[in-house]
Length: 49
Image 1: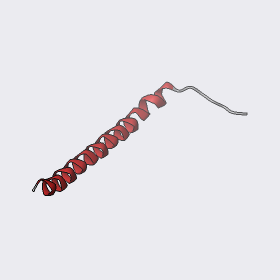
Image 2 (image 1 turned 60 degrees about the horizontal axis):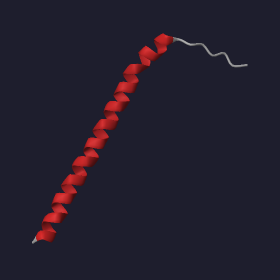
Image 3 (image 1 turned 90 degrees about the horizontal axis):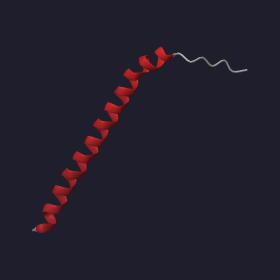
């Protein structure tokens, strides 16, 4: 019914795509942190005055 074959070289070839995906996730998390910090600084500065 299902023909499944283990091909170790496919894993090695897909490491590039996994690495790119993890890099994109890291960039998105960094952008979220920067935007949150920026908004926190903008709106907390108005409350201190």
